[in-house]
Length: 227
Image (cartoon, rainbow, N blue to C red; front, top):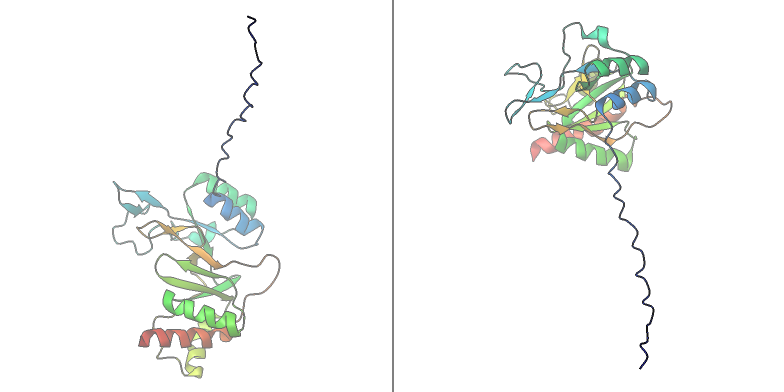
């Protein structure tokens, strides 16, 4: 009896599983360089958050720091402000954990209101206009509306003219000599980051006037205070 041998087909080769690493998050240094180089915004390196035995604390080491991880590191901080991408890269190479701060009063001012009011105002503006400019949300429970530089000092008078002066006690402006933390800087002892709700539009284009946004912002502040 002859033995019959049948060829057994070789198992199909299984291609190796290639694990694609997730995209690397851009460092604060890269964000600072982009703000300066692509947006042409001035930037400033600030304090940062450190692990203090399981508890986040500001690098300034002040127990009563009122802006953990998001304030200038020296009194003469104006000398560190730069609009050069190359200088920004050098500054953050020296301090890679430094927060990214944006000086106000130069290319824009900021109007800051409580998050609940800010969301209501933003919905109102996007529905009926005028269109807002960049808007950021902070871990401290506020929304920041970017407006034309030089408008911050005019806001109290504009509110009085429109009759909203007494209804918006929690509205704050940031203008000349102040700053805001730029996304994705981490702010506060919980370590959460500032985020864009409405990103800056690439290319030239001015910020909206504060006077155009104030009716919606003031109305939202008044509505949420009554709730």
